[in-house]
Length: 378
Ligand code: FAD
Image (cartoon, rainbow, N blue to C red; front, side):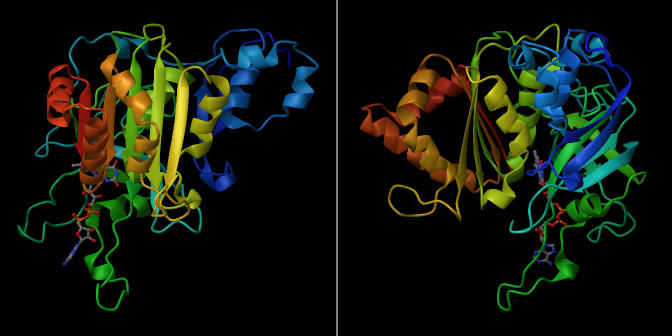
């Protein structure tokens, strides 16, 4: 195949998991690539890492340079047009019936619990922006209201508005299966397992799924300044909206958003087997070292400087001077994940502020006023 020929309508496997193995690949049909000489194959390399770079480097001289420049084309570009954020296009009384495309476990065998990447086909009918959530109504009856459907559960969308298929027809979720362990025996009690997360993680391709939304404006990515700094703090599935941001910044060719600022992701999980989308994020580090930073806190594998478990707040503390300076210069800071993450982080930020002779309360209120502070915890 001549390298200058645009590769369109190709089938390509995109790694979504931690190890790039086939269990963590999703197959995407009809992906189109930017028409750059050598670009398409390089995009494949960046995205799938399935082709041999060595072989191709004999054909094209500027492989590395091009690798960091070529991005995936997305359609339809009308998804950039609306001035208003799409909000609540479908409500719980009249949800949209979408279809499951794929469900993939994306953590390794040593991860506590299970997290799945779930691709949902909405056929372009439930458009959303990066940072929004979908509601899901699991099938069955609400035990608290006999005869009525279950309550809606919200899930942050983990893809860009173009979806993992780059055609605006799918949305991806990153769902942790809610299991229940008896506090006395330590044994799992399946009768108390989370309804919706288990429905989603057990779903099969083709299954129907009732969705609502999209909802939420707190985590929308401000795009007015393409040189802005975005500091993202995630624990576990809280990484979902940031995966969407980062794909928009570094993977997709979006004519109206050419990111040239700094994105800095802090991700806290239990151990290296629990890392989510690690390969995808690591590829941005390689391709965009000036624009992306990625720090991980592995609580069960690493120790903080006091010898305790390493949490995201310990990483924040490690880089606190830089973070405070970036915030003073207008950086946006985002927090997403379990509610329990915030007290530890707030304590750390307060302590750091005091050590710097600043009032955290005043700083926080200024950050909120300037719309630099974005929190979505659950
Ligand atoms: P439920 O059935 O609602 O049960 C809740 C919990 O109670 C479970 O842990 C269950 O094991 C336990 N339980 C059930 N019965 C009993 C009992 N008898 N006694 C004691 N405990 C019991 N989650 C994600 O995984 N990914 C996301 O990206 C995500 N994004 C979110 C975004 C927002 C804005 C919000 C608000 C929430 C988000 N969530 C996300 C959480 C999600 O909405 C659900 O709350 C979560 O999946 C649990 O729902 P469930 O139906 O599985 O559990």
